[in-house]
View 1 (spheres, one colour):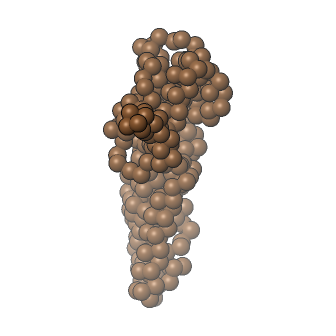
View 2 (tube, helix red, strand yellow; view 1 turned 180 degrees about the vertical axis):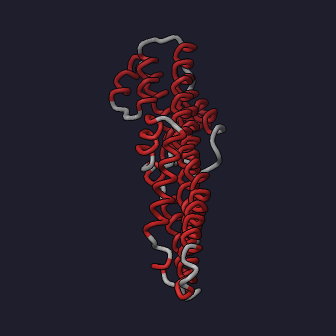
Length: 271
């Protein structure tokens, strides 16, 4: 789990609470049910109205990803692919069918099964690429749902403020309560801007980033599996895949194991 979204949202709301405290105001002054109901309920309603019902259901189901999605380690993926390449060179491509049974990732499982079944490389690549495109399109649609909410929320908040100010104008004969009523009227605008910039837009952008990382992960697996099917040498495959990812700490244990065979011939030549 990558806690960046949770940390960011909590930090932003914490900064807001700190400002309220430093200004000498009360938190209860902005926790008004009516404007909060309008902003959150109205923004959700008009967003649902702008898409299809299945889109809305998928977006609701995708929401936990913004907080619980695990950022994949490309180096771990590379080592997994290299391990599969070593197994294929040692026991043949049919051995990958057994490996597929132990894999939880549906994308990698499908690739391994296709290789073991002898699917034509071009057909297998086309099938996996279509799956990647479909997943990315669906993930971006989920993210767009929340960024759309972030676009509607400020305007919904302004609507709430206008409605409240209309109520204020109806009570000009009560000057003692005008200040409180005007302040309460602007709470709707506050929640509209706040919810958009501290909740909806960050969640939407997070889902976009998660979709990008997932696409990068599947691209790495795709190229790796195609190389395994072509019979690439594991060491060369590792080097090829490493240039596809940003620099970062790579596992050392596996590398040390791979370097051992190379060191032995060198020692033999020295003798």
